[in-house]
Length: 341
Image (cartoon, rainbow, N blue to C red):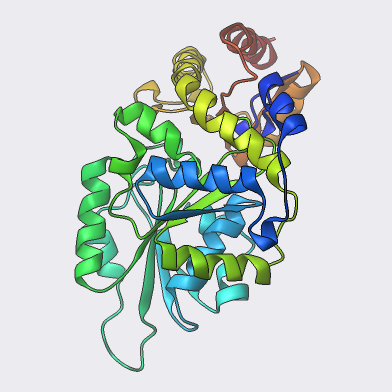
């Protein structure tokens, strides 16, 4: 199978499995797991922050941040296709008692003018804006990337109004690969950051929440509240350490493969994708008349190619460590034969 559904399907590498088997462990709820502590310290160092917290999933990391930054009855501004709004089970409402305020952005990227227009006026009988959430890279906008200048501008203006900014950086290392700057610089103005180890970095489980020491102390308590307190989690953190040190350096290969897919698929009648917009490892492809996404996905699966679909006329392909350039070339030929046989 050539699995292009998501980079979440990546398998841990042999080096990760070895590190997991040999990991020194303790009880992380007692703060005594040395491998977890080492992972958290390394992440804090990489991001130039005071502390970090290992959490089971990116969704939990995002929702912990929402709960800490907001009060019940407030709103969270987010791009309308954002993961935190569309794919986290309305958790911000269920857990924190806040409402998402979705705003459409061009290619998933919000400008301050759009955000400012959605901020509620300071009137006691109106729900107040408690948080702004950005997503970099933006999953459902085809892996689009906020530049440092765009992020800094939003953060500075939001802070001027007393509004914190959380970054859903599930694939932040894809963004820094494109921009060629340290992750600490790109994210330095955000109040909190979440990123995933379990997507393109190939670790089997886990995400990190990053921020100030006080923020992370609160986050640890909320993590426990949500059932995220882990015991001998060093067996998972060990894979995360390998992911950070080895897998971040190879993401450029995934980006090149995604552009190859985009260039070749754009040549096929019935498929619409702009290769110039494919900057990272995700491409969203629109289907012209005559095809629907579920049918195309089913036909491709019969030929051992797996893709995702996000709309009846729109499919998503994601490149990753477990899909080679040759796999991509073979997938293109299978697309061609399925659509024009």
